[in-house]
Image (tube, rainbow, N blue to C red; front, top):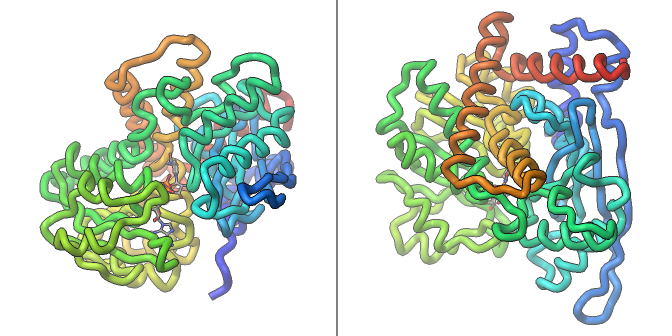
Length: 427
Ligand code: NAD
């Protein structure tokens, strides 16, 4: 199989819908590629006295509807094309959630687990030193993503505030509580996934109590999706997939009687690796990386990385699966998508399903601007309203145009971004 290129995937998805919409050639040319890209080097003094240089990126795909918005990923396999894809999906995500923001994404080629805490801090500050003139509350607002944490956002906010000469919490979201962060941000993406699953179950007339799910990934999204599926819907999660950074391979942690996400969280390190020995002792069965795909469940929730449902792996999906809820960005390749469509599996596309994170980030910016902070209940109630409205907006489009949910989500998003560009006289 040719190596997956996430940006190629993002462009293929866009092209399919642009064709269906008969989108004007000029508009298509603007939206197919990011408006701005920054590639830079970040010199960092390591603890042993040596100087190491890291490759950094920031891509601003489109900011017609508002400041660019999107996380910064620290990953050993980061590439400019991954960042381009994620920035593009952020444009569609903010538009589909109907929040007044555009799409951006950043990254550094680094495995953060190889760095000490002071080295991480110097790298975070170094990223801001290179980018600070091109980000800001009214220009581009980064956030955490895979491999970055609230603490890192705190350092970045501090560096920006020092360089710009003013305390500026609104430059970055996902900050720690007490440092300008919002209550509910930790749960937001995973719970948001579950709000959309709940709505899909109502539409498909699936009883949520006792429903079964398999989750891929046990980081921020996977953990709160698991808790939400059990606590909000009364369902059972039969496995979680997870990368083991010591073995450098992935496993599926299964328990037919239902996994206990809070226990698993207590034995998971900050990089999302579960302690295998403790899991086995507690009755979890360790299966191979793709075992989660083949489980007899109602809902599959890919919530780890892109490109896990491919033309090959999609064949393993059990006949009882009714919903694929994409917690991760870009987990389904176009080949796998074709199979899901054909089998009539209901898809909640990534930039709708996982929009809870950016929606709560937007709430965080609003609270920073007002310097007035909401209770967790208030945040989660507003989040639920936004996610539910976004889900039904896409469903409506899917029914009206008789198209698959992913295409419908693209239609809603492209229409909103196109309108904003027209209103501003860009196209
Ligand atoms: P995270 O770093 O907290 O966790 C990632 C999880 O995926 C970990 O459990 C890790 O072990 C697992 N993983 C990594 N590689 C794997 C592999 N090859 N096989 C199996 N498991 C693997 O990341 P996260 O914040 O939970 O993000 C997960 C996905 O959701 C990403 O695609 C991210 O872009 C997307 N997302 C995250 C947010 C957010 O707010 N955190 C918002 C929107 C989208």
